[in-house]
Image (cartoon, helix red, strand yellow):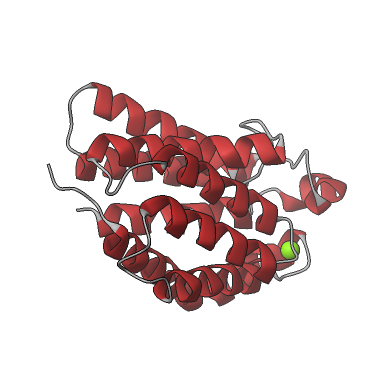
Length: 212
Ligand SMILES: [Mg+2]
């Protein structure tokens, strides 16, 4: 078992920021179908701000909680769209799970992954099947946890989580939105993946890539 420290977390944020920058246009296009075409911009801005802020933390003074809390604050300040408070809550929950720990174990990371998903679900008050990012996050967290309960290593748990999250995002194509701006479009959004679910899969794939 490897312990995960603040430097690994900082580079995780850098990885997510890079992924959002390179997928920004695709996310905006998806959002354009059902909303105001800004989701890619919001996610890029948010994670770029988070990555920059955590990079500037003093490595000698920062612990995992400070990294997550700093990322949360920066994300929220950078993003006016609804994804701002959702990811800020997820990051604050990750900070709470990390509290008092100088570094994180594989079990802690599975816990953080679950807390992330739960934070998004609690803040957005969305259920699975409502065509939101919860459709990717919730099954990903459940699958990741189940894999851990079976004794699989972190890398495999995250790979299983990614697979479930990607399937959940794919399933949003067949859903009619119950929440948010896209709910007013009714079945016009049918056939299109929810942009929040698409970006969630990106975040999850960064977790998987980072810890494999
Ligand atoms: Mg939007």
